[in-house]
Length: 451
Image (cartoon, rainbow, N blue to C red; front, side):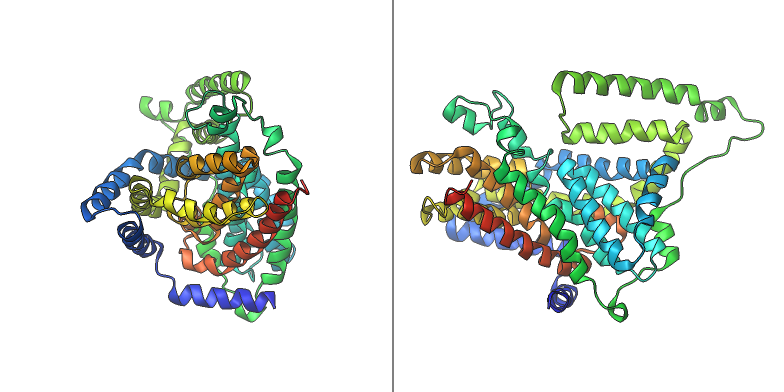
């Protein structure tokens, strides 16, 4: 039954879901209409908030491009290739390959969403190279599964924000005077147990979703090699010029890398395990510099990696515009308020989770969503005498949940794999249903005092 349902969603998405660029445009239209109808915004308010949002996300767009290309360059180094080869060798059948990819993608997402996304993508490519009968979109969907549980892990922006003293958006601290350590959020039993349940059941879901052999969508070996790339090594000319000696200088490369390592040591020794987006990019970059050995090798790897960034550059600004409308017109607060209005103490957490899931479709950013929904969540929890920390984490749960059907975060992975959103969304819709069921039950259990 699961395979048939997955097949239905896959058929539906491939035939009716437009390209991710058109999806973003249509979502822009829908957001604008909702703002006109429910937020009391006039036409020019919608247009101006949209325009500011488009160019307001450009810095973040560049961050996402760097996550992809620095991760790509790292994966093209010989040591990382060996690691990927070893893990891929465990995939002795196409079905096992899908399960391994889903597990690695989910586990990586809990450690750090950027690392999990890119490494999961390269693992999917390596397994597709080894297991020629693998369903390639299913493998990529498995690599993406980490983005559907990432906010319960160590790079979750909301729990890390709550653990940061005197942060402008630490609304729980402002309300209670207390900073919330990750032992009370990420590592709390009511968050850790469902995270582990999803970590070990999502691969089982992929086992049941794997299509029959005659229905698989495979990828040619040549196309895999083109996408996966080869380890980069530029040979030094027999009679190099001074410029070519510099290009191939190991000494220059490692002195530069040493500067980066000193900075990383300083960062982690003073701030602990602070794996924010900038540090992930920087870590990928420095490790890539070290493992490529010579400056010219890294240059060539970057030239190969940058080709996969078109979707991010084109579509991320459109989502910035959507977020601009949602936040600038107050529409996101109105939607969040609807779910608070008909909640009881027992159902509050579940409705917060559902509401956050809906808002995430329009505001696919954990930090951005908390800025919108956080004040409503904290105030409602205070009025109803409900745990503010658990309420905040329901926003985190909802934010990750609907990533399964939101192409925003999938774009780096899709660029890496050479696929479109509709190729994987049939499978990720099944992930959406499973995660929604599991987390709704746990949210209810929290509401009824089980945790």
